[in-house]
Length: 271
Image 1 (tube, rainbow, N blue to C red):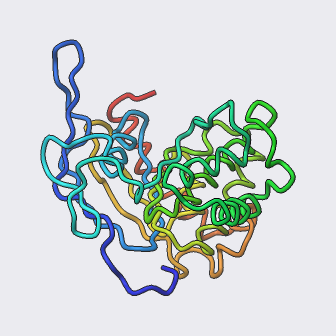
Image 2 (tube, one colour):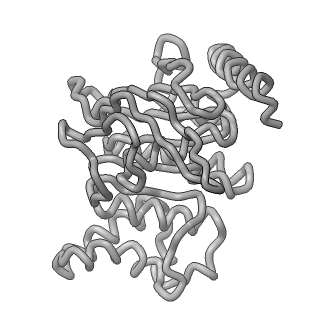
């Protein structure tokens, strides 16, 4: 994990989440415990409606568990924080602001000096390959470009943890592949802790250091699989998506993870 010594960053202990619907409560997440190390890229997959996003929202501080705790650096999470940046599937940009202004927004809000803001925005515009589009508005951008802006905006605020909820789910297949490769490069260069939600098994294996498979609702952790140099491809983060997914190691991991998810889908008739 990026050469860093293991340090616990996010710890969830016996987390359960309930919601009210039609005067009845239902259990969305049931007794989830896990530890995410600093600098680790963890991907959570599972059937639709299994509680992936709900659990991620407990890390974001947007949802409070009815049982258990979630902590960051040993401090219990009780609400949102700039130390945990969130990227959603929908782009969530300010339509009246330019690319530059969207990326700058959090920095300006925090009172960062103008020259420093310019330097930071310039860095992340280049990193997400949007040079020349600084003065464009969201309606002038493609879906992939909008999501690049959203990712750059979160990175620019320098959160310790990035929480990404199916950020590429609304993109076409070609754009999604390119975005996966770019995110992998950014993960290597930025060295942040990432928690990533997806329905795509291929995406999970390509991006993750570990893949956590959740059961059908109420969501539990069914199995955790490490995606290491030994069981995948050496230097995979320097390889293209298409090259990685063609290897026999990748296909073996894909079959294993999909079989676990499929069993949950069939058992609960979620299709």
